Length: 71
Image 1 (cartoon, rainbow, N blue to C red):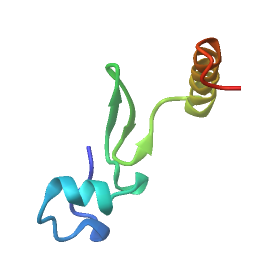
Image 2: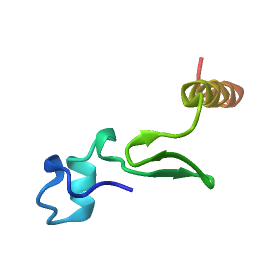
Image 3: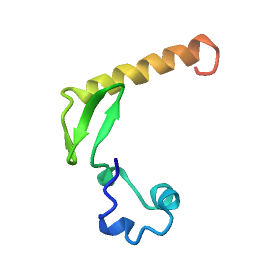
Image 4: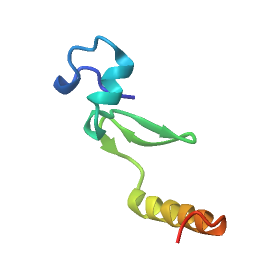
C-alpha cells in the first residue's frame, strides 16, 4: 500500500500515473507478499529480509542459467 499523502505524490489526479511516475520505495506504507507482511507503517517487519532477497536473486539466476538466458 502506498501512502498517498506524501508530498512527492500530491496532488493525486491519476492514481496509476502517480504511482508509476512519482512514487518510490519511501512511499510504501505496507507491503504484503504471499500472506507475509514484511513492511507496515513504513517499517521493515520481516527479519533478515536482505538475506532472503539474495537467496531469491540467486535462485532466479540459477533458473535463467538453466534455460540458457543468463551466463
